[in-house]
Length: 574
Ligand code: DGT
Ligand code: CA
Ligand code: CA
Ligand code: ZN
Image 1 (cartoon, rainbow, N blue to C red):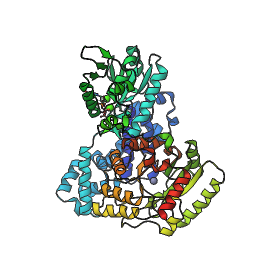
Image 2: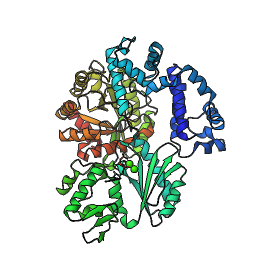
Image 3: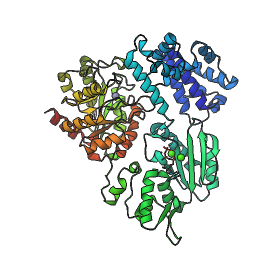
């Protein structure tokens, strides 16, 4: 059994326990073990053989025994017993966005539905709305979810692919002296929100040695296709990886070609043709057959009289014309970011203390961190009441005594409630240093209703940023019906910033709406929404998303200094 197969099995057990209404911690334990196994860089059998399964984070004795049984016998009695209680088709209902264990159980017990297609049929014939607690609106929602499921591909979130690619590159660079240079290419280098596969590129005079080293990496489960210019493998975690190897004098041409996008490359080749040059992954050819080699990627663009174009812009969205006109944006960079405006602590649903979150932010070189814990009506996240908020303020003030190069700011992630009202009175908001307002409930309201909610928040002078404006969860939940165009216009008018949330499954706003926001004169804030100290490190994904939306430093609120942020809020409150 591969890591992927064991992961899937543990996840399924977690789902089954969830449907059976088992203890939450038990359910979470299986899901966490599954995630950690998927993130292993080696075959789980090497832990098993060494007897060190319990050294994998999240794997205790009970789960280690089950893995042992699986790897020894090829099956698991516990799982088989669960299957007698929950049919697999019922588990598959959880794949429908917005269908959780409670609904799956309801559909199964009250109507005997055991597959997505049976649920679809029942929804289309108007039977679901007759179930207790469902109604016509839920029926339409489930149907929309099923349609989304049909459309869904198996693309991988950027945040899952990137660390895997980094570990492969490290393995190649340290394990194979013949590798002169290696990097990511394709949609991964362009930092697309999801990628179809991982594309790697290496420069070497000895491709055979490089390909051998690649196939021998511990992460590799099987070689799908092997050649001297391109090798494709599948990893233990199920991801597919292409490695291309080329001579160092052709590095720049190949990097440019395999970074794509295809549409961008079509435009680049058109410009080459106008100059009577043909361009391929090997370099330029003149009409007489002689070559122009491009050791660096800048050489490709320079040959055509163009400045280098950042990979995030290479989507044929006007970047070639901008390059021709010398109007390419100076994209925001990691060093421009001075702080983070959205993070949680263990005062609500975060896992880090205030001090731990602050130290993690200082370690990133930030000047400030806004602690924006959830507010009272979000009970599942232990939202803060005004009283607890005041108690938190005292602790934040005390912590701030120790630093003169850093400041913890007190904010909140203010619930925009289902009826459109806000979770705190203005007097409470006025005491805070910063306010992010977000929608977490009733995400399936009609467009008019949910848009009105967000607009109401934007028009409150104490609201500084709208958190994860579309509400999407990649691969799980479609964006809400909110009218983002109207939200952007109102944000521009009131000087409210829109968040680019860096959690890899969110990346919300997306690149296209960032671009639109900037066009209409709104600002964005690139936030981690960290729920533990390590969560702050997701910022590069949000940063890349903003860059894909052509954001420059002045477009991004948290490139401001602490004093500037304070003045900015003061001016808006008036
Ligand atoms: P993905 O993998 O679906 O997220 O998207 P990409 O852009 O990574 O596409 P992929 O992996 O098929 O190819 C990587 C890059 O290589 C692509 O952006 C452009 C270049 N490329 C690969 N094959 C071709 C081809 O047949 N024609 C052209 N024009 N470019 C290609
Ligand atoms: Ca690719
Ligand atoms: Ca590829
Ligand atoms: Zn949050």
